[in-house]
Length: 200
Image (cartoon, rainbow, N blue to C red; front, side, top):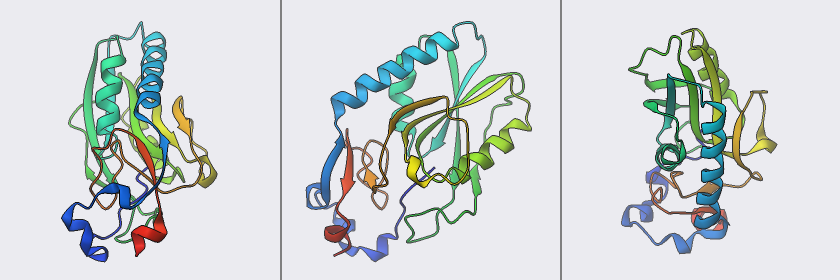
């Protein structure tokens, strides 16, 4: 689910909104390729749900908000949106603690709906496994996952992912909704953090 939420206090300089170029190691996925792939995902989703009259996209906050916004515009099937906020990372950690907390639940009754969870990144899969189990008890008509990034090397739980933007290596990524200590979400590409430069 989320993949990085280090403590801001650990990096005092981050409060000055320092230029991301000081910390970036490489651009993993540029803006053009991102948008082209999102268009492809939107086309596939539109095809698969063409007969649905009750499609609901559930965005996992906060990282997936930019992905949801762009993906939604590529889906031709009428659909609603709702949001969940979930945490599974301890302060200062870059890997999931395995403890899942629902910070904000849905406001929509998903009973009988075609539900598509929109996620920014999946690593261990523990958080999404919990979300799937929780939402399945609410009896949706269907329940599937669309993730922009899949950090498959870190998978600990086998979960069914119907739509994947990119499978990526086990690198600390940021940009396009993914934060670096809660900033740089606004970058239009996916970058890799140079941890040696950032930690220093």
